[in-house]
Image (cartoon, rainbow, N blue to C red):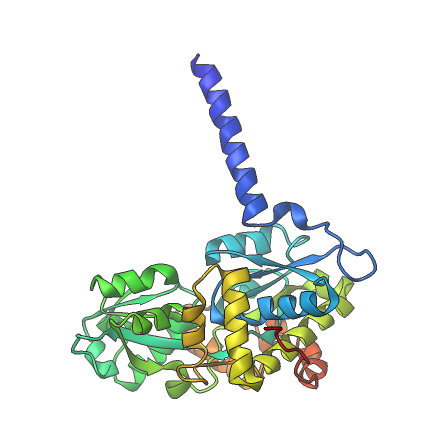
Length: 348
């Protein structure tokens, strides 16, 4: 009897794992037919955050104009799952939007990847409770601050701002927390401050209990959190497809930034069709203010990444064993940057 229960338990676990892979990770969709003459679609990993908005926008516009997308957008709910798929099944998901320091760290660890384009600029804020006495960075002394993880660039912007205020990480309590959990933690006063990519910071403001201490765009103009990383073998074997992807990201980013109407349209179809969120949240963070997060200047620049690397080394996050050329391939950027905004209007 006990052996029988063990077997049934194992079978049930396999079934649940398979369902999770099919429904959430698209494990069995790597061989679907794309629009490129019967070739298999490749997966592009993303999270439901504004830093990754160009991934679903590009896919939606392609499907709307041609009837089918040329890649498979694969949504994950957290970094561990996305990273696991990117590292473990590169044949199915050779490209992903990931944190810039994480991409560099993976390269330091020997993962053959290259950053080919940015995902966004700005799009982060440090939020405190509206009733707190925190009004300056120096007021964070002795406070608990939640960041997304070790390799989040939000950790570096905190480090950078503390340094300006004459403080270090030793002067605060830094905790790692999944961004979706941060609003509730701030509401309950379990932490004193939170920072991550949008829309989770905007949620606290929209719901009336969060207050912006500072926006990334104001303290680190052009702030980069996430980048488009691609496995090197995909770059080698499928260069035309990767160039098409990068061009699409560039064109959809310029489309988003072209008008507030486009931003509101994107908030609607992305929230409902890709993020499984209430569109009011994306509408808020894409408009309050309009430059809270931008998508037009997405070329990876040496000076910016060298600053990220320097700060990460100072903060003890990176070892400093790789150079810009090791983790960035900017050969796709010139053609992509020359692209014009997509010519698309949402039918209403």
